[in-house]
Image (cartoon, rainbow, N blue to C red; front, top):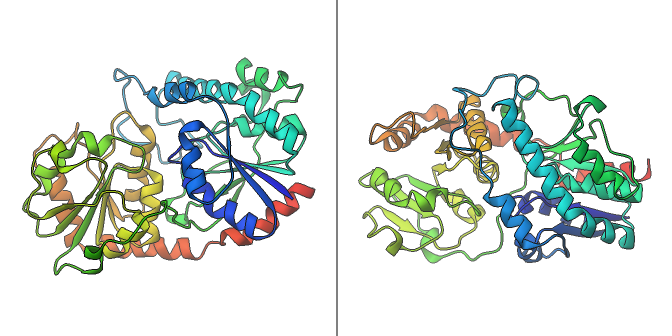
Length: 391
């Protein structure tokens, strides 16, 4: 069987790696289609990459942000995505338009490869709707995979379908894929929200890229170790570096600043802070007691896979980061620090001390870890993919 994986972006590539490798280890041929910005991450994972699109289109998509003038709701609705989306309708349509526009810029390359390679199945990131176009163009089934966020393009009936979506399929003589296919979902029960899309649960296996273990990591400090990370592709924490350092200076904890850049970017480090350079979170987090991060689902799920409570400091322009913070609080495993609504100096430090000082947060984080470990391993889903390909 030939399986074509389609990644959405560099920070999403790690979500595809465990299942892609499980599929390959089961004896199937695997290719991973990715934009130029993501190809090196696919290759670093030991998988065969298929470059699609051009870098300029990808950069234009990455530069798009929700307008600053747009008002963010006070709280994400508890019934989302069954209820209203957590941003105004015009913003949701703008997001869908961006994803469709990006997919359209990738479609020629991906369909050409699919027609030449003839996959039996397409497994696509739910943000990479171009995977559905390629599957339709060669007449094979498609299965979506989510990144613990119900943010993807799907249309339940024809009334919801914008013309641009239909035109992508018509360009290749294919019928538009309308209605929900099954999504592979790594979200454990404690973090899940109701959804009309059928789901196949799969255990989250952290993959954070290659790296080496530094000597200092083997020595556990005699006090809590706190990891501060802004993820692998965001500049959120790098931009806030001085603010973060001022907040954590003097904490009775060893603080590991796992962000890009050097000490010179923000002046000297406080005595209780060290920087890591590039270090996979999968190596660092087992030695930590708390994870402080920007609200990225990949960073957060890696933290929960190691049973860590979390403090999230989302970027106000990224609604998905706010959603992750809401999910952490829903699981009673951490706290959101909202800088614009909590301008009081020391809010982050107070949150860190609160989470470290109350055992309940760590206990709930360990419960999330147990839920993750009870979910089917990627290798167990390969038979489901095989059945889907031959159905």
